[in-house]
Length: 269
Image: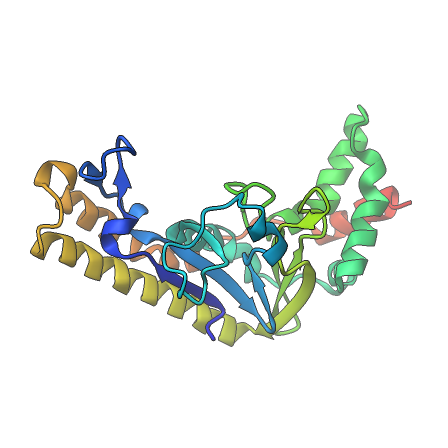
């Protein structure tokens, strides 16, 4: 099972419609072509998989293809999660030092650490707030953006001792007393080289499928030309096909680890 797993919707189903009540008015964007379901496969757990109890509430869209093995996972453009991983990749690939790893070595350690700093939130002491940002920003640089979802999974990627660690904590993502996500909390690690190979596989598979979709739309005349700008789709695709290579060359955030340690020493209670 790939680390980054996804299935795209059939091409016509992946199109947007405007107005929604008129399916004959379909149009495509590059990201629209990536509409589908996706998950991050971490051992026996799946991040972005809804809990059965939450699915029974009927608060999310049912799978259009119930036989899809990812039918109980989030339904959104896969290109968005791909792009968000690339956004934090430069920081993911930078080793964190031992004292920083000790703060987040387990889910419980991370929870206890952040709880020890929680007293700073809500106060109007600029110096304390500056210290808080210094103490914690490095972890924020490694957090996957899931803000496009209600109670999106909290997921972090960080590198330590030759491993990429994946951490998730969705224990507070509940609809009343019902957990939204099946993967409540946990950790998973894999060698750096294997992580990069999995990311390359994700990238290549996504790019290949989108390229095939653009070809299919054009050769089969799936939409009137006024509803689909093939040249624009090809232009965007040519730009994005280099995104992974570009992300690997971007410089990570500068972090003064001595200042991070000092800030934590001052603030922890």
